[in-house]
Amino acid sequence: MERERLMKKEERFRTAVRAARVLYVLAGAAVAVCGALRQNSYSLINALCTFLLVPALWAARRLLRWEGGWQIELFVYAFACLGWTLGGAAECYETIPHFDKLVHMLSGVFVSMLALALFRMLERERPIAAQGKATACLFVLFASMAVAGMFELCEYALAPLVGRDLQHVLDTGVSDTMGDLFVCLVGTLASVALLIRSFRGKHDFLTDAANAFALQNGARMA
Image (cartoon, rainbow, N blue to C red):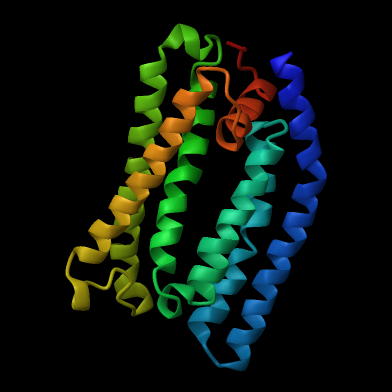
């Protein structure tokens, strides 16, 4: 019954993903045009690079032989549009107050979803009930925060290459970086709370997306 519910929900997202893919490309194209008109090479190049996500997801499906995962793919496009197209290419991080913190908090939720799907895939022969619920929660928590730390390292490494103080070290010291990590932790803890709630039979977008993907790729039901 639970598997049937997840598969029906997954199928409803198939059409939505096609629309999201088109909207994602159109958003990137619009930002690229604006960057060209403003003669802003940073915005233009960044916007053009966002197009690479579409073939990257296609290649990942082919190479790793992933099936389904339409809910997760929709969330990938939504988060990439928010954080990359709007935040980076359209420079909303610089022009909209607290936009950066919002995206970092949502990254905690988004990466937690991917981490749960990965956990289910790595332990596909055993349902979570057999693996230990605490193990699943800790895996999601540590994986999400590890990605947050790696992202900050990437910002630090990219700053001299793009000629921008991406972490605002000059005007905030380490405050911006620490703030990003803290809000990501908030999003991650909220996701762990949803995971714990799902152990009691409750449904939510995060665990449904991760479980549907895992079930379509060999994981067993609890």
